[in-house]
Each structure stands twice: as C-alpha cells, then as structure tokens.
Length: 153
Ligand code: CO
Image (cartoon, rainbow, N blue to C red):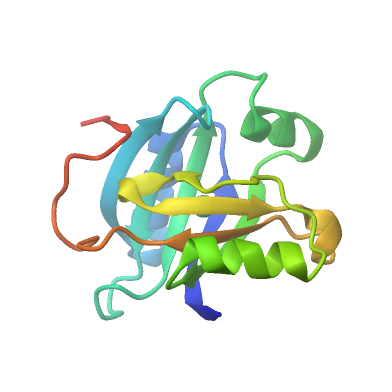
C-alpha cells in the first residue's frame, strides 16, 4: 500500500528563516512554497539536492495563526518533527484499508495538500505517537501546476 516516504513535515515559527537554514546547512533545494488556508499553514517543499527528482522531500510548516493544528503543536512542543508522510497510489483505497484495519483517522475523506496532492492524516494514537500522513501526488506533480493553495512568491 505504501510506496515510499514522500516527506517529513517539520514545524517552524519562521518559514523564511527555516528555508534558508535547510538550504545553507543541508543544501536542500526549494521546490515549492504555498499557503494552504484550509490547513492554516504556509508551507515549503525542499528536495534533497543530489537525489533523483521525485524522491523524498522535507516539508517546512509555519502556522498562519496560533489557533491551528501546527500553531497548537508549536505552542505545546516547540519547533521540530511534526509528521511523516507516505506515498500511496490510490488514497481512497488506502484510507479504506486504514479504516478497515481499525486505525484512527483524522481525515475521513482526503483533502487537498501541497502541490495539488490529495492527503489524509492518521491519528498518532494508532501509530506509536507519530502523526502520519498518506499522500497521493497529483498526476503530473513534477510539472508546474496552478496550485490549489495560493502561491507565495
Ligand atoms: Co505533509
């Protein structure tokens, strides 16, 4: 069902500062940056520099307001690892399989994620305390698309 780790999500207080740090310290390449009003975040995807396109990413998340899931996470735990996201080929089938397996779902239905992907979150109570996301990328995720979220730049 899971085909690879798509990204790790990291909560930060200042997206611009975090992007610069990941670029300078780890040499990651900024691929995309957008605002997702529904999820209450400003977010950036960075690719590992020498990895082939389409491999794993780091997703940096800055809350738009304190009263959002990432804002509450920051207030409680401070900046750091927020979630792990696995790619799936068919998110509807994957979500149904998770439900059938008795996992606690945060999202009963997939919603729109970064770069027009479809995403759903699984409750950390079902996965050893790790907030887990499943992601079905948009069909042509490597091509520029009119993102569902508002582009920042
Ligand atoms: Co994510």
